Length: 380
Image (cartoon, rainbow, N blue to C red; front, top):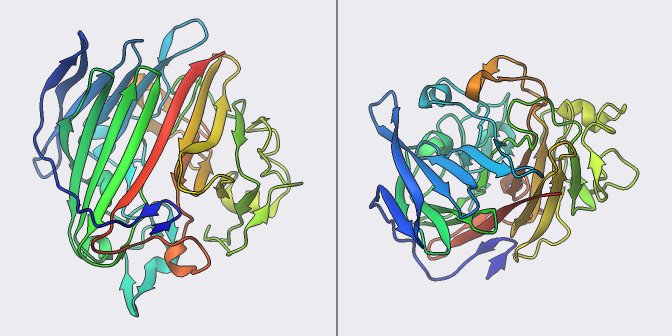
């Protein structure tokens, strides 16, 4: 049985816990491992650098499954890091707006931190006003994941696994999660998510990378041209919780069905833009049938970099760094100011556990959650 991106089968999830320092495949070293520091509890954290045949690099840490850096070429072939983040683990431990992190158990917001499942009310951590956001106070972004190098001759690949215990952040069920990052020779960063539970639960996994295709810290993203394969979006209330309406983008500042600069309409007098302090909304994808399909395209004119986002998910949250305020200093001493990065978070709808008309996010024992997102890079 399939519920828009959640596949229920009889397969259980086996946790793979071994960790190899590096693997050479096809004549090149695909993955390099190095220490990245320790958590406050003394847990060792490592950084894994994945490399493809074109020299594209993705650095991922076992803390939060965070994409720490992602280096891709511009139209002249020059590599630059295009994701926001920090040079060391300390930056992440001090607190940050989910830079590059794996988000769970539930990406985005759940109203008032509560939902009912099978007649039982579950109370979650409230960490965004009166609402629950991105898994709570200690979500998957703050877990130390087990990592295994699963590279092949065709691609560099890491499998990250984590067991979220029954009651963690208020969620029911022991949940076994596996996330595989794969950097292909076609300049794609592929993320495959899977999970299994021993008790009915809700689940909505995503990655929260902030992109600036001109290079991290290189100005705002208002000139980036965005296309979203979505004819509808979800209006929100003052707390950024969906009202339940699936509204047409036609004739609104939310119409990105054709390439449009992020800053072209962001300052229009629109109530939804006021509520989000800009774009911080969920778009309903046109091709949301559980198969991998194009969801978004971003073009940065100065560098020529292009990013395409493909996903099996039914929706995408488009956020433009409205809460970045210059207080965070990132990699290379770059200060992250207002709208210096944009996010394209593939996911199910926010607050789905409280809105029965939305696609189901319930995962049952004996079932398996599966989802795939691909970030594909090129240059013009």
